[in-house]
Image: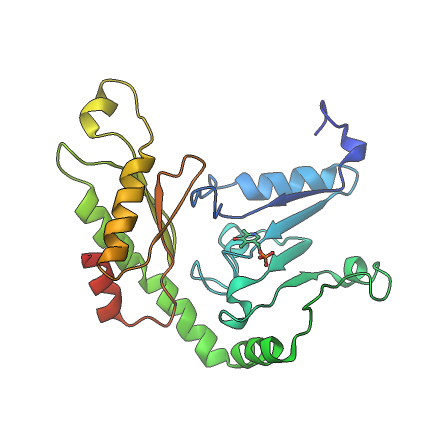
Length: 234
Ligand SMILES: *Cc1c(COP(=O)(O)O)cnc(C)c1O
């Protein structure tokens, strides 16, 4: 920020508190607060959290930023906001939101009444939100079960199991023997093969990551334990 663009030219830093498409990368503890402090010290630039994938209880709190005790100036939301119906939002401090002229913040489908009804129904129901938060935390069970299945044996391809709550991924690399020899090659082919085998067995999983070698699990928060474990068994 200082050397390349000049601190006075920085308007904001936009970051996913846990990378989604990038491979479910959880930042090191303290990174987000430090980044937030840095941008605020930089000519009053804004700290913007993209919570589109991580928001609405996915990680076990309302927003993933909360795990790191940072309060973003703006957050972007979508996906879980209306339980799958198309809706997105930008939320921020009044002084920022009100700085936009009337009609200056919008989109073709902004305010779709059916999607808004789904979103407001969801958020009004505190008991339901509480149960979704608990559900996401409980999905660490799935995390442990997955680690158990992938963590052992000379042919293991699991480099790490990571994520938070109901946002968990397994990164696949060449087998352990190759890694011990000093090179850990990403294994996108293995990720693709596993995803296809899962699809054939009736389980939908997606891959992600810069190198396409990460399998991600994003179970619906309303999933029951039996269905979750059936999926993990596959
Ligand atoms: C899906 C996704 C988006 C795109 O959201 P749209 O509502 O489709 O624009 C943006 N950021 C993250 C982190 C996402 O996962």
